[in-house]
Image (cartoon, rainbow, N blue to C red):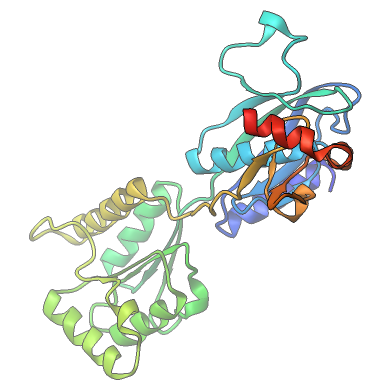
Length: 307
């Protein structure tokens, strides 16, 4: 991918509801495989689309990008030996020392690409229209469908679904919504009506675990209110839930280890070129470090023990 293709891919992933980070090389000191303007997308699971640097830079950028996705705050990285820069490192820059054999250095700007929340409103009442309009006013991606149009394919595990059919197809809409396993599923109606709907679906064999996730009634309890105020109460609940726990989740960090030769942080897995010595597995940033270790493993093992 070139730089523009990376941007297009980032937009496509965000449109699908996936949170990613965009990394851009803004400065380099050769020799380095990363070039000015090189870009890459890093997903929450650590996948890389594009190019920002070689084996020394990429693991550090992935680690930092995952943190950017989790925090939603951009950061500027300096990758390389800091000795040559002295006091010239600006405040606020994240310094990531790497022991790269090429002795190059990079500055990489990493920014979060946060997808807009996806709200699906099922129903055609004035309240349903008001809720969809309020969602769009917040910049959310909001779809409003009648219960006869709505299917599980209209939502995803990152969607927030509000069934506001008000007696017209409640059971059918909830059954379709449950199949999508959305991040939030609410039914507009009384607790008595909700119990009847969920009881009917339980008799049809719908998993009780999924039915227990249905919020009835949807929204914050504001007492007797107008249609527009009910819509505002539901939206307020959704905003509150998002503030507590973002619907985009970040996969667990992969295990890391220190390269016993150069000290660089590396992935403790097959990509880390594992080598076993006296019942312990060591990992390396490159084939050169692994070869150096294998030439005298006892020396490096003793060094780690002293540390």
